[in-house]
Image 1 (cartoon, rainbow, N blue to C red):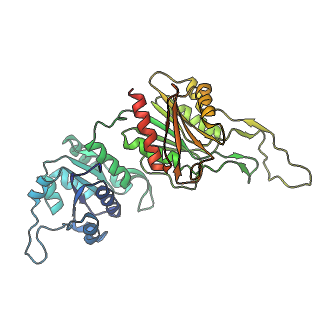
Image 2: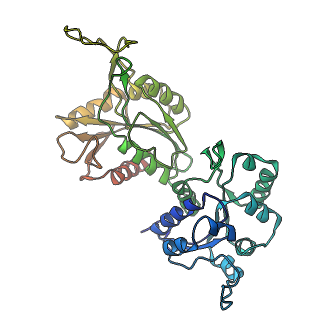
Length: 402
């Protein structure tokens, strides 16, 4: 069943360059089964055509009290009574001001004043506008009324400034809606750390040691944990993939030592650690400051061991913390994975084999076996990595609550 099946959502779009994100948001809401009615302010129609929202929502987009031919009246009272949730995204400084002061200057504001359902606000504006005392005061007024505020995100703004003011990404808006309708998600209140991708170990200024990890599995795990209510910190090595939307914090690292330090710090107050990264076991003992030139003699690179991140965290693990590791094996997979659980002190290990076609590095699918420290073994068929991540998280939820 779709997670928002039967839910009626009134989406208010105000005048902001971020209005284009609302179109993607409508797609996500519809994909989850929600019935979406879009109301735009007149200024919002200058950024995105009402037709765009009509096509995506499968409903006529409303932006005026009376139709142009005068034959139809858009009843703001009925709209306010219809919805299970009203979301203003993007909410401009002007619209936020109108909401706080109770003005009914357009159909969106009139519908807001008529809404008996909960209201969610996602601001979008430039940095100084967002930080201005007037805007912050208006937001405090709306929060005091019990409205849900989705904080503006940090990043590059339309003006070129860097800071708070960006509309939350559509995926993050969707997560907020899912959380609103599903407050009893099983990982609510849990903090989860996920490592993803490879690490790289420099040999000289132009060469390094690494592996073929794409980061796809770790990224999907971060999203799956978020969908179940967890606060998620993603620690990622260098990948060609764009970082996923959803995690509460993304920490970018390059080397195994950097990943170790970030993981150790984040794990101190975490409940769950999933080590999906392919961490380099060794690094060059000496990093040359200049590019190594061929001189006819054999090149020798002396290596030293990197920290064992997951074993180190397991040694400092407290009651109420769970650690999940991965094992990529070419032979004797089950035996090696069980030994790894015991040796490293893990709660659960996810085994994937290089022998399985369509699984492992770079692929969009995976075939896994999950083994826990009680030696319970569960095999899964080859699946897309998104589904594999959901299987791992569901297993973890059952294990935690067993």
